[in-house]
Length: 156
Image (cartoon, rainbow, N blue to C red; front, top):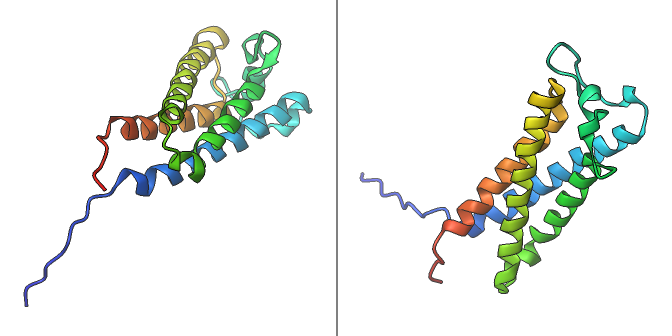
């Protein structure tokens, strides 16, 4: 008996919208947690502390604010915006600006991640595991959106 399998290509629209929405929601959740921890007592931040890892040291450093606004608040606003841009309705939009804004916003997020990682390693000398989670989520989201942007439009 001969087994014939059909290989259907994975289409961008099948995995990218859900993946991007889940990543945006995860980034929003971690950013909200970091925002609450920023304003609450330092013992709220669950993070191991040693010579390299010190979440409280990072989140209470001078670099944890930009123009007086906590970086965690900026992260929450960034991911809340991306949640809106990664909803099923936004993905169905035929307006080309939606995709450009989605990709452009994420590019700004990646640049900010580069700044924050440099600040952690060079200026603070410590890393925050929760911050690292946000950085990884941002980079993963950028990768998903870049794959979508680089794909040619599919024939329907």
